[in-house]
Amino acid sequence: MAFVASYETFEGPLDLMLHLIKENKLDIFDLDMSVLCDEYLAYLDKMDELHLEVESEYLVELSTLIEYKSKKLLPKREAELIDDYQEDPKDALVRRLLEYQRFKEVTQELVVPYMERSRQLSKAMSDTKELERDDEDEIFYDGNVSDLYKAMNRVLRRLKLAMPIETRYTQKEVSIDDRLLVIRARLKDLDDIFSLEVLADDCKTIEEAVVTFLAVLDLIKDGVLDLAIKDEDKIYLKRRER
Amino acid sequence: MIEEYALGHEMDAKERYLFENTPSKVKKVPKITGSKPPKDQEAIIEGLLYIVGEDGLRIEQLAMALDISYEEAKKSLERLAMRYAKGDHGIELVDYGGHYKFLTKIDIHPYAQRLLDIAKTSTLSQSALETLAIIAYKQPITRVEIEDLRGVGSDMMLRKLQARNLIREAGRSEAPGRPILYEVTEEFMDSFKLASLSDLPELPEYSSDEESEDLFQR
Image 1 (cartoon, one colour):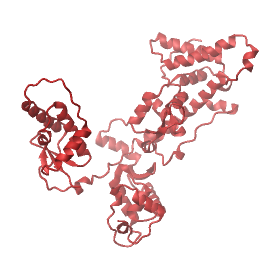
Image 2 (tube, rainbow over the protein chains, first blue to last red):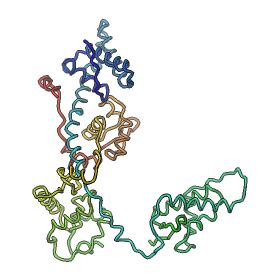
Image 3 (cartoon, rainbow over the protein chains, first blue to last red):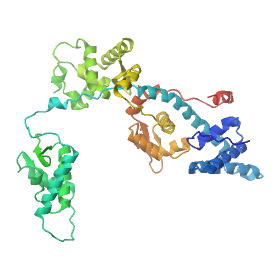
Image 4 (cartoon, each protein chain N blue to C red):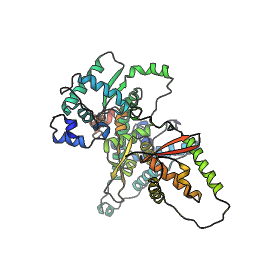
């Protein structure tokens, strides 16, 4: 039988086998493993000819098919039958094919509501933040990520200026948690509103400045501090109540 | 605080539990002056549903906000849903995964497309659908079990579905190696228009020879 090249894509070896069974009008409940094996191999060969990549999963199943076929060719020794019983690989394969078929079928039913739902739109939840906010502090307004980036650069520039050329090879690791403790302790002595530079003024290395920055992000996340950016690149922080 | 909420209404155990375990956003109900149950209940529900939008409302949340019983809230929601289904409305009230929410009706979509220049809607590949179906019917299920069923590696697919918030991890199996178990999310229920998993279509059954005839009809 001439092999007709199919452009259908298969979801995997089981999908391919179901296709071959249908194509060759095989009875899945009385599966002719020999025909299936030949057709399967022919298909993989064809894919190879077309320079399509044959995924390893297909080869695994192929080996199962070939093993089954080759065993059938060998004369059976009776002792083997008595020895520990295993599910017939053919039955096992048919069971897997049927189980796979069930899910393949049901996806055709599931896709309908999915397509419908994707045509139905909803609104986002109302933003109640606007109502809750108090506008006492005029300098506070939303900045964006690039503002933060610029502000951090400013801190780093100052750090560079404050730090003359120095060569050291010792490295001290400061964890964010440690830094958080220091900052939390220092917060008590600071004004309600202060700049990021003030917090970073005791940093001697870039690592320390970065850790300070991360610690501040943590505090903002935890609701201890509020953030504002002024003049494009100055970060102000405000202690929150509560 | 409880007195403030209850207005002399005696909470039963379930209500009290829900009251004490619901995020503060819902809990901070201002005193509702006037008799209970509130008049124009459905109008209030309609307004609240409008506010919560795509997040939707659970029946318990609604019962809390209106200071009415679970059953009553449920009935009101269903009545409202009926009204939207019947009347000349462009939106409908749906219950997907226990979240009641307003959605535009399907008929609106072509016009929305024209108005808003909406590109093609998101689709799921056949392999994504297969994987989702397996998880939905068999959950909680491990990756290996999914791969056995599909006959292909599913690691990437699971990660993709997790990224789309259609599935999530649901603890670990007691099997050797304690593999991660997966289950579908509320987002899945929403995407497939399911109130609960029992609304899934029945899996076709192929077991006897009689059925082998129509097995490959499609």
